[in-house]
Length: 616
Image (cartoon, rainbow, N blue to C red; front, side):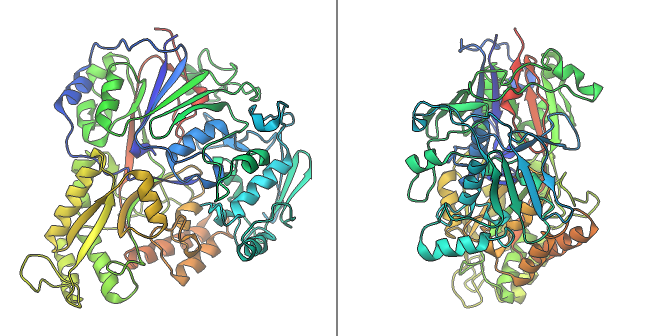
């Protein structure tokens, strides 16, 4: 059989439920004409070089960072880790809207009527992939593994982005964190009141307040169980195990050349999982010949890091990739409106479109001495830059119309998202100039650029990666800021380096996307919670009123009361000029006709174990 291949563009990039990715709305303004011609008119070079049989070929646009579940913060690492570590729950592959189903757990969680206690029963007989650390013996997954893994989320040394799920909520959790901070070491053997293994296969979690959304977090790889023996043997100074993942999922890591190549092979110890039978007759054709087959369908996944869109698209055209996300700047060459061009359709290529459940923004570092602070002049500077940014051109030119203006922090498709709200931010160059004039940002030396109110130079530095995706964005930002007299420069670094700089508060501005992988939008609002500074809160916002609203929202189920709090948090973010909120993008995927079993899920980007390929 032929090989399957997948390409993952930055725009399609999931941090657990909210996962950091390279700014998905930032695209270069032009691509080489040869690529345009090949994609638009079809190439006959469909015969790829011979490859190992039944291998899923994957291309990532951004390098991975590591594969330790509680420490993962980027989409690309998450995609690999999710294939290795199986979460307790997942979503029905076909059901829309999303439907929670058991994965490593044998049944849905049992939840108390007051939403404070969750009882989770594991499947019996689940085994970790074989590893020398187990001494050649089978290693069964137990409830104690889950308890240990979730304690790692609380360990200050691990610096998990998802500690906020338990912090100020898990019974006894805050006390355990405080003791670890005081002593310098987390006591993994000390009991925690709210986290216990009731028996070998049952976990009980108790919260001090209602927690409606906890069940959704259990679908993420960040809450997937790990084995303590592996951590003890391979952990680094931060108690992380980024380079030796051993899980209970469908695949295991067999080769890794950092930022170049990752190879996964089927885990022979994985449970007996089968391709699902869809309930909707409209999906019957997708599942034809696959329903009931044992997963994973392909035994090998090979991942290459290809940062530029041009080589990925050429590889797709040559048949070396079976699936590719179309960069926004090339959509006019492959689409007629929202339909595939006839030349591509004639080749049997399919188009899959989805409004991404993602939050895209450019943040300002509120700790920075130039753009940060809470005084009226600093707020005015940020708001003026937001007013001056030409988001209409971003949508029309950089995005080729494949996006819609954002109206709220809740991403599209999540609970509380209101598609009828007006755009959150607007472009008004005259208003931006007037605001800067009013607060003392004036051009005192006549060079066309403003100085700060104290007379010092005003230079704002925006971070971006050196690839073509960000170059068009940089050009648009500079042109927009030139128009209002704000001098903008750029710091260029690779993605992993920028992540480290952002966590340390060393960037003034950076454009990011956070792909949401659960229907609960809580994690999007957590991005501005002050307790997440150094982790998720790259803007380093410290606003007591925002914190109060956020903490109140976490005690409520989905509904009008919680949505009202979400709107107030969105208003505070806008009033203080914390983010320039980018458009919600439409993702367009081209899929070769030989790919079988593919259906795009809004909250799980790739389920590699479900993909197969028909004989050519």
